[in-house]
Figure 1 (cartoon, helix red, strand yellow):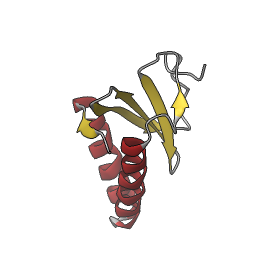
Figure 2 (tube, rainbow, N blue to C red):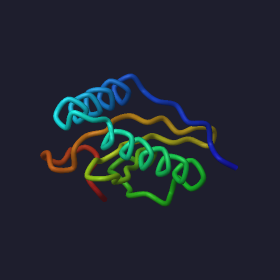
Figure 3 (tube, rainbow, N blue to C red):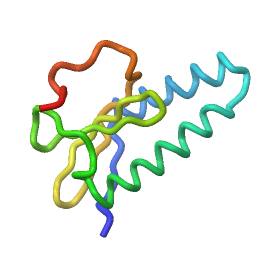
Length: 99
């Protein structure tokens, strides 16, 4: 059974900024649509199997990689909360680095 999925404010703002950047830069929303499709597919998999992701320094926080982006989420027995999405090319987050 899939867990409920919630999107945190930070995640929503970051995703909007990423999609807007690529739409403006490319003059088309083709890449953004592809990114959203891949992202939603990955989130659906995580909702089914949250432990099929990379661990972090916190037991309840994990992350996945989607098309060059790191997606950080928190999970409980009832829901998954998407916390952040950022470019994997940026300096890694120390608090969430792999165990």
